[in-house]
Length: 188
Image: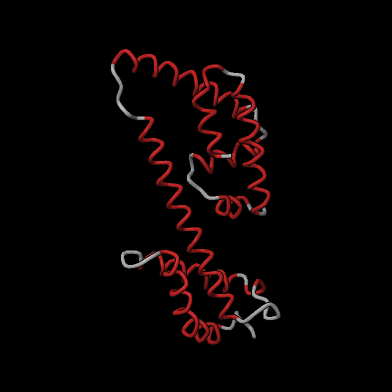
């Protein structure tokens, strides 16, 4: 079957979109997430349209493929939201007000830790440095970085893992970066 045929694709969409929505809803939860479910269904069929060769009829039916892709994409969205919530909690913990004497020391320590982190980042190979910037400060997932950079997902994950491990090693030698080591440890 030619999935690039617009008429066939429209028929397949009408036939399989409800199952994809059901699979996404099972992961994302009840009401209030309708737009996320619609986004998942849209992403699944857009990917199927752009990359029809990824579907292999010898491995299973189109219905199974669409449901599996919808479930996988919904899990990605859920994990991304959970990671954002955890990051928000960590930021909230770092911004707790302290007494003025402690605040001065903390600000000086924060500046020193920032300088140590920037120096350690500068020492990383460019691909590792860029992957870490995009993941930590660009708020992109490894999959989004892979798409943006045009490299395999495993390559991006390897760059992140190696870069974070190297940062941790370099920062362990810095007395001012003790807080950053703890944060990096939670990322590894």
